[in-house]
Image (cartoon, helix red, strand yellow):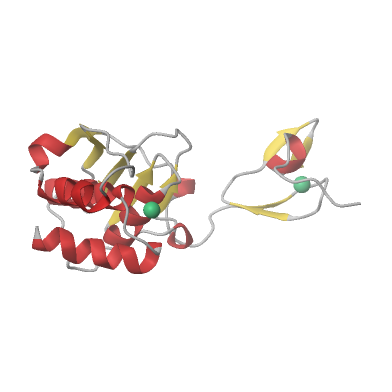
Length: 184
Ligand SMILES: [Zn+2]
Ligand SMILES: [Zn+2]
């Protein structure tokens, strides 16, 4: 309980508020780390790659507790819209996927919800599943392994994200669709 409170505070400082999402994310991250033999009090930044399956509150908890971040290429966002995260221990190669057994909402008594999340034992709150994660070479941390230039927009592309289309090297934005439109 004390541990959870400590880590929840740490996540709160980054996330900006305390909610069921970060409380559950904290529980998943700590349970997964324990399962992989990783000490959350230590600096694990070079030792873990985390996959988060949703870009909501919970992802911030996983990021803060594991020390993984997109800037270090150690936090991967997989757009599944699912309340789950997978942690890979890079020194052992072991990986575990964590989800929650129960849905908690932020409606109702917040204090009560948080207390329930923090006091329910791992066995009744978190489902851990041993998994294998094949991390592609081009997804691993370290200097960019591949550099290209889009023949349409002439912008640089790293890490093998270019595609060959119509005999041209193109960035994904030019090859498929952009998430933005240019202002006229
Ligand atoms: Zn939140
Ligand atoms: Zn382009």
